[in-house]
Image 1 (spheres, rainbow, N blue to C red):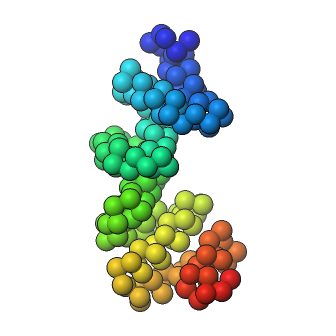
Image 2: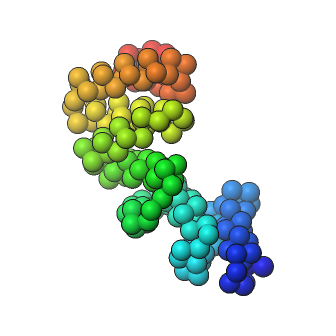
Length: 168
């Protein structure tokens, strides 16, 4: 199925990459399959999902510069709002966690943190760290209070308390 050039081939190649990466625990094979997808179908039906999957995989497997390059290439596409938020979050994390460019990450995290989902919660949490890394204590304090007020039982509550107060 993946050998053709129709939508079925696109679906099969995307699914094969996901199978390698997520199910068979073969990340190199999964990434290679997704890269093949983009070579064969650069604007195919699943190109956005493939690109977002590759960015995440590159980050996970210490290929931050590849992730950064692909994320910047994606900015030229008109993306649905949900995919745009995921891309913005990837860019923020790449600036913050890969390149230590905290000032560039701050506005990106703020944009994502406006949402109401797990992505927004993670952005709100990482926003605190960015403020601390640029020695913006008032900004970190404000971000911390915002996080704790918005997510009193949030996934990162213990980490926030532990890192700032030395206790859970």
